[in-house]
Image 1: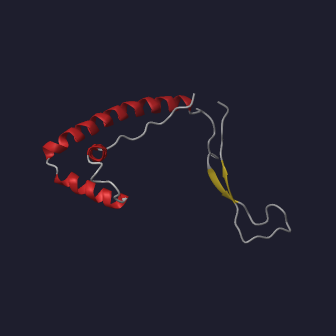
Image 2: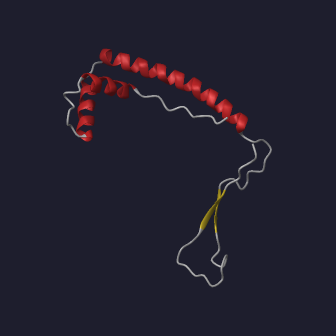
Image 3: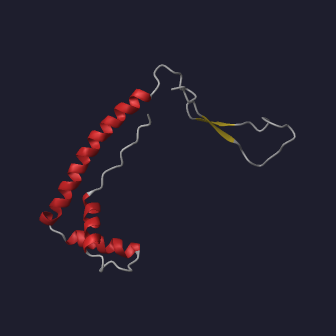
Length: 121
C-alpha cells in the first residue's frame, strides 16, 4: 500500500481569493494574472478583521484537519521504513574518477551517480 501525502491547507487569503473570484468574475474578466493578484491583494487589505474572520476560521479548521492527516501519514510511513538495515549508501552521490570506464574514452564531462538503496518490502 502506497501512502499518499496530504496537501498543505490553504491559508485565509487563498479562501478569500477563491470566494472573490467566484463572486466577481466580471471584474476579473480578461485581466492578466499579475494584475489579478494585485487586485485581490488590495481587496484583502481593505477588509476589516471582522470581514476576514470567516476566512481565518476556515483556514484554522483546515490546518487542524491537515495536522491530523499528517499524523496518520507519518504513522503509515513509519510502518514502511525498514528497521536495522544499513543505509550508509542511501542516496549518496558519487563522482567517478576520470580513469574509470573505457581507457581510450576522454571527455570534458564529469560523471556522477546516485546510489540508491531500495530494500525488498
